[in-house]
Image (cartoon, rainbow, N blue to C red; front, side):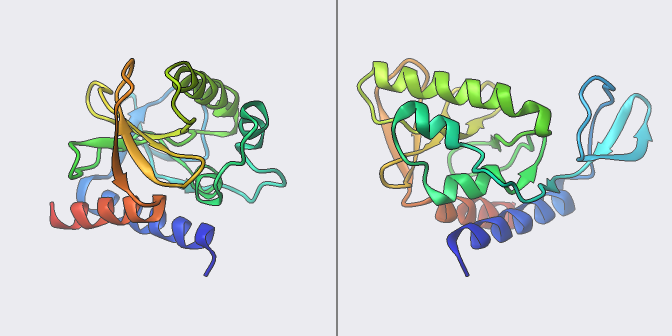
Length: 185
């Protein structure tokens, strides 16, 4: 099994477990912000949603980011961002509650890429190797989980600071930690 396929399957398990333990998930219904995640079930002005697999893409979702930064994007990070559409789901973790940062729809890609670029340029300003984000601590976002482009390791970093804490050797191990934590919650 390729790294990308294994990562996608781990995400599918994580989302299935999250829905079983935490869901069903509802979001305020906003016709201006459609998503393939949305379902027909409604509860007042809330609409049910669930993480939904993306259709295969002809291009790598973060290729433009890699081009601007002059660095190759790890396969695991490409797989992560091209696997599912999802709204944030607060998940228990060994590093406090967090939510994965995935696109809500195809229309969200430009904003997500712009935020990734700003994040990586801020890191370069601090003379740190660029590391696109994959998750944030909840509820206040004081802690960003990122993937080092050079090694694929997952680190925890804090806005405006140079410090980074190694969390997992790779994205697959990070997601496995989350799945284990969720099953024990």
